[in-house]
Image (cartoon, rainbow, N blue to C red):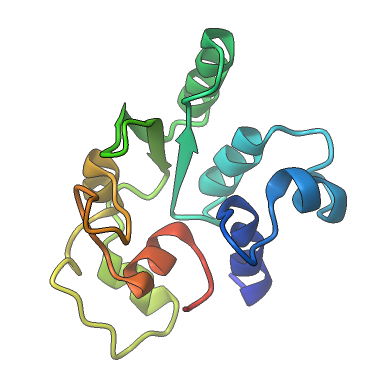
Amino acid sequence: MDDSEFELNFYFCGGPQNPEFKTDGRRLVKGWANKEEYEVLIERVRDQKKPIASIVLKDKSEDEIKRILNLISEKNLASNRFENPWGVDIIYITGRELTTLNNLAIERNLDAFVSSRGSFTCQNFIETGFDESEKARCCVSRIESALLLGYPYP
């Protein structure tokens, strides 16, 4: 995968200085104009352009949540829904259940990558969730987060 695909994953990151899906992605990226953010995330995970995605369900209607869950099921993606440490209803998805963090580093030519979680699979990470915050169930480093979410290197 080329670097431009990693850059596109920033549209789902939010936060300061990052483009956002609703304001920039729909307008600038061909093929995203008439889609919901969760639809594009699910497609990118299915197409292996993003190893793991998280979809916040907090402000979604029950009908929309059902659509999201059905779409995840239709695409045969692994998922785990839970309330994160901040009390937010969230679902993590992956199409690369058996891919390890070390495998992701190798794919990105990070030969010097070392992590105590290197043998953890994408499935392991979606089971607990992860974040760079110490409050997270699984606190990951910035480089681990970039590998798991398909972002460019920090």
